[in-house]
Length: 121
Length: 107
Image (cartoon, rainbow over all chains, first blue to last red):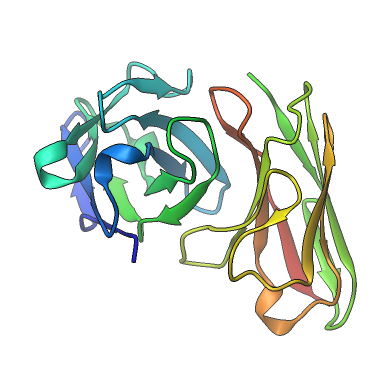
């Protein structure tokens, strides 16, 4: 069974750094892209970017480029989403998701449970 | 970027009703469109891929159609488990983009 298990909720202050994780199991990690999706409180889904775990190639939405970094550790079957300087507007639920088809753009068929990030002074 | 516009933003319906949700792309995306269902506090769930293909395990009352710029998701007979928010997403080019969502509420 394909599973994506995300790290727990975080409460941080503006300007702090943060890395959240998404550990995959039940399939060959390097075969399928992982995307990260933001959902701000009471709002819709926003695609942030994706990574190919095989070669760490990334694509980012222009809305998030330069503000977050997506990475993987193949030895741990884990993807990461990282901020160097958090803002209060980063307060949101963040989901990781595995794409459906190997090597091409496709919908996401497996999702993590979400990580809630709260940023407040 | 390809903009995805969903309508309506919300719909009130009764059990057994037929519900149709529309998604329009700002440019042609072929049939590279997926539909997701999200319930409060839960992760999204893929219902339809490639515009009209039913994801494994999804009830057959859900169907999708369309190509190019105009797509629809239809629930043929609304069940209690279907009250949720539905999103379309284009899978044609980066950046991937979602529609704004359609909330299906009980009338």
